[in-house]
Image (cartoon, rainbow, N blue to C red; front, top):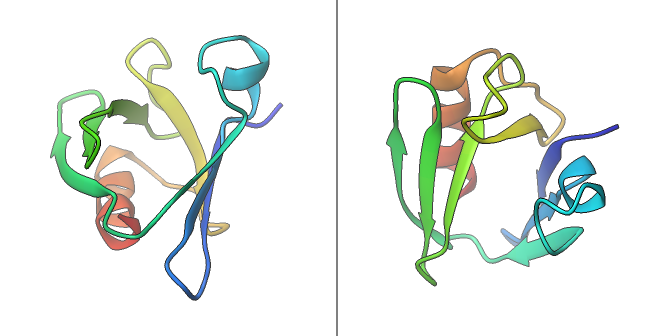
Length: 96
């Protein structure tokens, strides 16, 4: 089953499919749309990335090979699979 799948369109709309995290009751929504610029800051930690949204909601995420106890696994962004945490951090910078 899919983990987080993030896609963007030409208008900058960010769509996140929460996959199994919704099915397992970990997050209360199956999909979400955000406008580009929603993410106001992100921190690269030793084992996860912490992202703050402009509504002060925080998200802890990890790359596909990361520890799922540290955050939600980002399976892909625009069809690209992050290779590691640093790669994911660079991809997030472009999307948000």
